[in-house]
Amino acid sequence: MDHFSYKNGEMHAEDVPLSQIAREVGTPVYVYSTATLQRHFRVFSGAFEGLDALVCFAVKANSNQAVLSTLAREGAGADVVSVGELERALRAGIPAERIVFSGVGKKPSEMRRALEAGIKQFNVESEPELEALNHVAGEMGVVAPVSLRVNPDVDAKTHHKIATGKSENKFGIAWAKAPAVYSQIKALGNVSAVGVDVHIGSQLTDLAPFKLAFEKVVSMVADLRAAGHDIRHIDLGGGLGIPYDPDEETPPSPVAYGDMIKSVLGDLPCSIILEPGRLIAGNAGILLSELLYVKHGEDRLFYIVDAAMNDLLRPAMYDAFHNILPVAEPGDNARNAVVEADFVGPVCETGDTFAKARKTVLMNPGDLVAFKSAGAYGAVMASTYNSRELIPEVLVNGGSYAVVRARPSLDDLIGLDTVPDWLKD
Ligand SMILES: *Cc1c(COP(=O)(O)O)cnc(C)c1O
Image 1: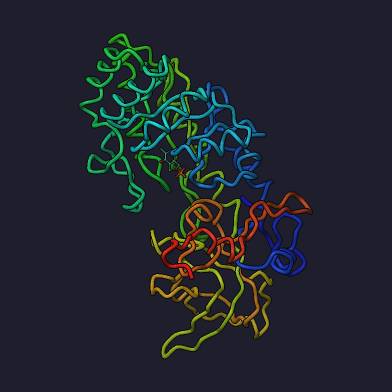
Image 2: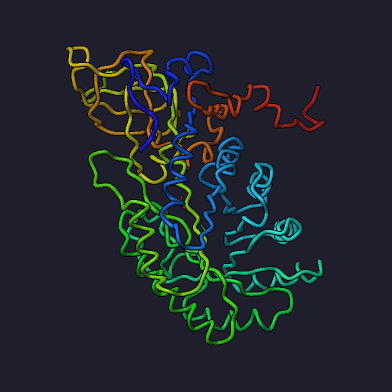
């Protein structure tokens, strides 16, 4: 459930009309809802009641400081994948002891900063990374807490670009190798094994692959403990899907996911870490855009909007579906006759297509549209391709809103480049 709905004939974010934001901030613009972020976080956390669970928001889904601060106040931890995300989480008030550090390519400088901050654990993805971490920790005279990210070789049955748990993926330590790597941790002096970590992919719409992977992990934890390793937590990653398309079947609820995890854990005494990203932020944001032109192609209608693939990459990158709704609530009059249109942006790429032959209503230039479910992997993946400025972000809270990232000027954008002396004069 989200807080973007029609009231008095137009879509609102909570109690703020989207047309007001468009008028005052300009389009395109990302709009997030505080109430939705809070609700998703609470529903997700509530699904693990009775367990010793830490919910670490996957910062890569949405790293805006205002979003992270909202979640920090809800008690969220953070799953970070770079020193940049680590600094963002810390500055938003997420305590280091609630931060886990994932990713296959952590640099020694990033490890050093995370050790200085005192994070909860490193999710280590290879032996060379383990050795590098041991070395950095040794130089600093500390012991790094480690969970090995294991690769359970499970098919997540999601888009191939966001499946991470098969043996052919770059992620995690091969299942059969993991026990030997835990023994290696014991032999090294400046790393200590505190847990086991798994993350098999994103936008999973079925519990079965999760269950398969988690059962394997639970049995590995039992074996590791029997071998004398002090495994205290299991990090089950993120990946629970969200409903993007109202006509598709809905993914399992957080409660069903939590119940499945409880049953897989049984009475294993263990704390758990969860790393949801999309589930918290995805439906808590929309991309608000204006229709620039209605172009009648030879055999189709193009709705050319002012947002483009550089602002919202998911359709171009993952063939992702976003529900695109008119901000003015459609009535039943002729003006709102159902049409099929291709929604496209201004970028000079055929891939800059948000939707093909989408059933929608007849609209006119100047009308506003809302791309739903754009709160995760939206703004964070934006680029300035075609010298388009990064678009602003707005956070709504009840009847008020704040610009939480301003639109940079073209001077800001071009000013990042420098011209060498020999080209001056
Ligand atoms: C991307 C990622 C997540 C979050 O995935 P969602 O599908 O957004 O929940 C969690 N953990 C790791 C290691 C990731 O790479």
